[in-house]
Length: 586
Image (cartoon, rainbow, N blue to C red; front, side, top):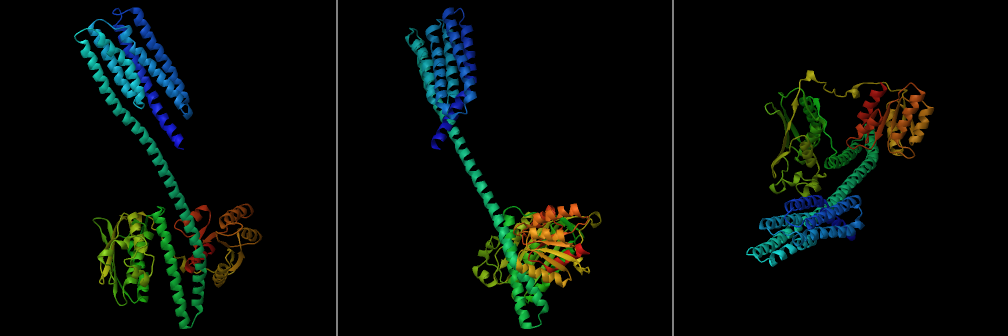
């Protein structure tokens, strides 16, 4: 590897020589022509013709060398050979020019001065064109200038010795300049290779980071599935047991298990949301909605949560807000829910939490503020509460639990919404969290505001409807069968995608609930095959619902795009299950 890099650097240095060769040859040919036509009739025509012809022959040979080099320069092994050939070419070019004072040296002082000036010009050009190899320049300098210096030294005139001394000083000066140019050129060549290596390393690091992100995404997707699958059974069976339980002590225990299950689900959701934000895969979807209705519904939800914790939740939601605004309704709800959840959790029983929403019509800003009379945050810990996986104090985690991701997620979501979370707090007194979000106000008559899904309120007779449930997990099979039986639905169970296809082809079903991760054939492939079979054998279009623990943000849209008619995440929410059944079986 080291030898390869050495040859690559040498190749670049050689490439510099050949890159500057055309201009050097043109310059030398022009100067030779000036000397030739200027000295015509001043010196011996025979010697002048021989000298000029020699310069042309050497130039033509160097042109041939240049053409051959351009055809074969990619071959690293030929670097040394082409350097030798280039050196030979520069040697003869300098040698022929060095013959000029020996063959065509004029007697007239003005022509002598012209020869000195032309020689000086060639030497200066060589200092630049051969800068990558200083030994090449020294060779050219020595062969082209030495005969001229020697000639002026042996001429017996009052000015000849001064000229020879000036030529020597000029050669020294140009040599010093050439060393500087050579150092700069070679440093740039080395720097280019260092940059290339650095870029290569950076690309490797980027690829490693991308691979790590892909691995992390796959890991999170797998972990999400593996955790949500048993959670689906836990939460589902708790609901069933609670519905039929009359014993107050047992009901209390079940409520505790139920609450703990949802706490675990919230932890999982926090980690998945945080991962999505960090990887830049979190998407913002701005839609029109009624802000007052949205914040009122959030308040109603957390009013019950506050009562259970013995906390008083007060609201101040402005009645002068616009009827319809455009922004990401779900993300705003997620941020506010995080803030209210934290405020209630950290506020002692009997204390107040205040929920304030107002609108600045001048700045088109929606202002949201959550104030509590809780434990507060010390000045030393103010910054850490917005840092990932951190809480103000380790004792907080032990006493109140949580991942420490709620506020960082809220803050990162607000950044995506062109906002920022502001924190004010005093230890032992309470905290205030607020943000201002720029919103677009629209006329409700000019846009189609999405209607809230009220299908859970529609009573649909589901009796005698037949369901195909494709699910490989035995516990979830039992849970889903119980939930579907309560609705009066007739349920057949398929243990994998292959069995689901076989049952579908031999039976008649009103809806298919399809798990995704199953053995033998996954739910996605089974869905596609079932739709293809139905397309060729029936006029019906049986709705196929993805029921899966793959519930990372964006999964719903992905599965629907791939062909599923709807999506239900695990743990299965019974209200959402009812909505889907009512919608597709009405």
